[in-house]
Amino acid sequence: MSDIQTWTLVFVVLTFSIYIFVAYRSRVSTTSGFYVAGGGIPAPANGAAIAADWMSAASFISMAGIIAFAGNGYGGSVYLMGWTGGYVLLALLLAPYLRKFGKYTIPDFVGDRYNETARMVAVVAAIVVSFVYVAGQMAGVGLVFTRFLKVDTTTGVVIGMAIVFFYAVLGGMKGITWTQVTQYSVLIIAYLIPAVAVSAKVTDVPIPQIGFGTILAELDALQTDLGVPEYTAAFGSTNMLNMLLITAALMFGTAGLPHVIVRFYTAKSVRAARYSALWALFFIALLYTTAPSVAAFSKLQIIQDIEGTQLSQVPSWFNTWADVGLITQAPEAPGAVGAPISELPGDTVLSYSDVFVNNDIIVLASPEIGGLPAPIVGLVAAGALAAALSTASGLLLVISSSVANDVYYKKINPQATEARQLLVGRIAMAGAIVIAGYLGINPPGFVAQVVALAFGLAAASFFPILVLGIFWKNCTAMGATAGMLAGLLTTMAYMLWTIDIYGNGEGIFGILETGFGTIGMLINFAVTIIVSQFTPKPSPLMQELVEEIRFPGKTELVAKHAQGKV
Image 1: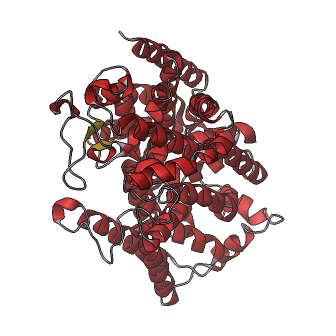
Image 2: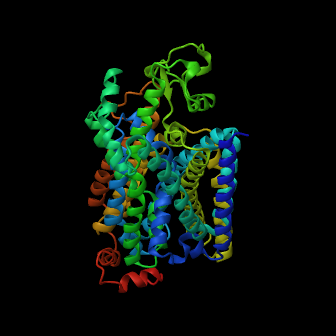
């Protein structure tokens, strides 16, 4: 066993043991504890849990790679702008009001604000969004185990499933929350240490956010020499329309993600929910402002290591990732799989344009590329697993609560005891984990691309009916139901239609599937507003309640609603 495998195993075993211990100490026996941690999580801890829930495998593993390669610098910034801006939108526009409304889940809010038909549509949308999103997380788990512990993807995903099953089923939201606080600590340390070390080594500036600015001119010149658009050139990898649509889809999708919104129900009060958002923004910014520097440092080093180098003399990190199929010969067509590097003769002189580097390896490979010691490599692997598992557990809880609370308790058996509800929730969680594992073994794309599709679906289904449900008291149940269906189905149909196997990869007007969620959202808004003009208005009591949740001083009607008295 190599030093990297040994240190990875040490950090994985150590961190997984901590997660299990924390989950055991946080086990619950009530539905309130299972769904929203009893609403008693302090703001700083809740902020760290939100950040861990938020910064998924896509943020930790893929984002720097997308900025470096898929987006060629400028184009990849859509993820930074969309995800960060969307969180600000969520914190200011939705979270405090949904917290005041006082329900466990988005379908719960939709059911009370509109009607039971809308609730069922919201349940389906929440499950679809969550499963698409969780596929990316479990794929990230498989990637880490494949590379660092030399086990196959299936085995790696099964190990991840087992860990999530233990702490999610045992502790519900309370166990997940405190585990995520621990996971955030692991992932942020794992992300910052190699970034700081590489920045200091390359630029003599130990602050990556400042240091990477000194190499951009060199990277621009290097890419120009290779016939590639400058790293900092605008629209080098995409056009303005897709930049706008993808950024908007990520932004509005963020504000409609069920597993992020439910986090604000775990705060002690509306005031605590606002402070949780502030803490989360701080914790998120630590990683998001570092990602561009990791992208720039890694791409510069990769080009220098590959261009004009004989295959027999490439650095060891190159062969390590080529052996697991994540560095290949450049494919003949976009989306195709390139031939293995091993098929080339040893005396082949490599050219950067002839090599394909998978987006998902940049962060995981950055310690090796930067020449850092094996313990740092192992720590980064543990951080990647923490990022993937923390988000996966939050998504699986959304699926579990949608089935147990919104379908079983609200529709099938309203007389169910708390013990029965918990049992159904845990069974639903177990079933969701099995499906998530299958999707992780057979993902529909690279990690961040799958996640981007989930954000598009969330934007097209949830964001309009949440905003209108809070800020427009005359938004009707039939309008919301029709809008959700129109937005979700249109977006799903476009995403499936543009998959390359159907020959429609160019899409309509060149709109990428990752940006079509914005169009679906606009369709949702239009249908909801139009249908609401011609259908029965909400009851006067509901209209009064909608008015009250927007005013801090008004709580009487909200309190009665929370107790089920109105």
